[in-house]
Image: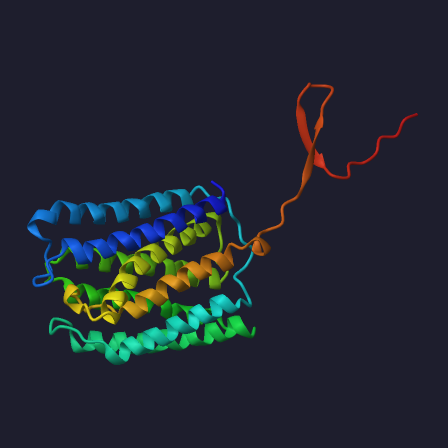
Length: 290
């Protein structure tokens, strides 16, 4: 499937998912308990299913793409700003994060250390996208490590909760972000192949959908003083918003037209001998007639 059609489908799925997530938080969840209202329980589960189904279709379409980028972007102001936003968001979350007693002290320390290194990386990477300078590929190893530790701490935090509306979406966001960040690290280290291109496209778009669908309604409810609809503080909506923006911005920069591999062009010429068509170079050698 054409890349532009996949992006067009994503641009339809994204606002629909954000709207469905907002409806789920405000209309189907009981503000006092965090559980689905009894009369709206089937609708609440249906909304989750629709969001995940839309993400699954997006992933399937992404694996049909034949886009072959040549190299990671060197300078891109939009990607640079998105990376700076993600770096500062991770740093802010480290300062303000709180966990339940089930999370061990060493897990929190490991999360803070890897989070600080990840924040520094994204800030430096953002500056690199504004003014090009060399950045060793080995530095990206901290990114998937941080998301693994992050996933463990968040899972430990919400494992005791039975709020399906929060736990399922939250874990899905972290898992998709982990896959995307692992693909991002491979691409930065020039470990490229067709399967990796499709994986980063699928995981990047899914990460953008899930993170933005979860973060935008939460931020809106916080800014409008309707925090009674929020019952889980395991993740910062600002970090999830920045993660979704970074994932989508990287996809647009990496799969841009100017970053595609050049293909050898040919032209079709009718073959008199077999009555069909064959492709030969644009400047075939001229025949010499005696």
